[in-house]
Image (cartoon, rainbow over all chains, first blue to last red; front, side, top):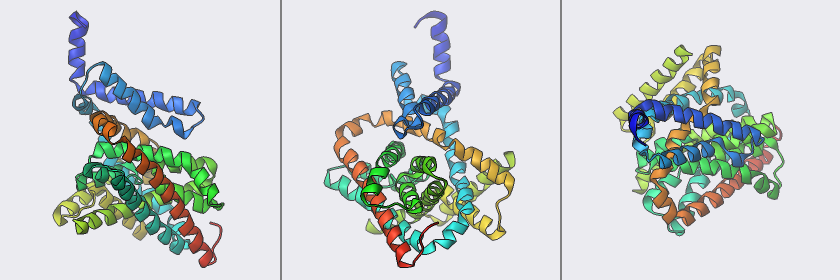
Length: 239
Length: 117
């Protein structure tokens, strides 16, 4: 690039405007593709938007840091969005009360299983300590998972990628797994998907039925809370 | 919308302050979420303006992960070197977590004789 266009590019590349605008454009393009693909979990809009932006930054030789100068305004909203999860959780309070014992049991079992199985399998297969710490909160909704990884010395941006991958995997693999175990009840299916595959699993569950979606959303919120409180304590005790 | 956003930020701020002051290992926004949940439970209802604003914000939740997701470009080397343990852990652990959660919940529901939502 040379001359006038080159100067404009140099100016834009260092201002937050470009990173922010590119993020919004890429996401909306990705969402359009996702809709056109019939909301197939394999066409996950986050994965698509990320791929587009990585390609853009790579081709224009832009660093992640200068991209993030703009994108941080979107990223910042993860905090209030986490707080906002309290509202749908509260909306399910009656369901929660009526199913207290099965939900509490499944929540603790699932929450611990999701973290421990990832740690054990990753460790046996030879993952490094930082990778393991970034991998552990993979089933928790992204804003909470990133907060946990950051607190523990994992890599929050790696966690974000692993969480999104888990969500896609869960949305794709849930049907086969649950059919194999002969679990038919939509409440149980929804809770299992929401716990293991957070928001992406919940979105998938809502496509099947209202009950399945409600229980998935409940599981997502509860697992976020449980993992956020239990997991750092466990790591601290463990050393 | 503005009122709701301010409320969410105030709860997040209180959460962050509690985490810092008490040295808790939990993320500040999670404490804010727990406090807001407790507030709603005590009040006995969530006001419509808050529900609407939160619904709007959460409808775009996946957009908020994009900037962090782009951070994958910082980890290509690690992902290349450790792709096998990462892929194995993700796939196997996700299937196991779905199975264990569903089996425990179904077992407990039958145990206390509650089927259906």
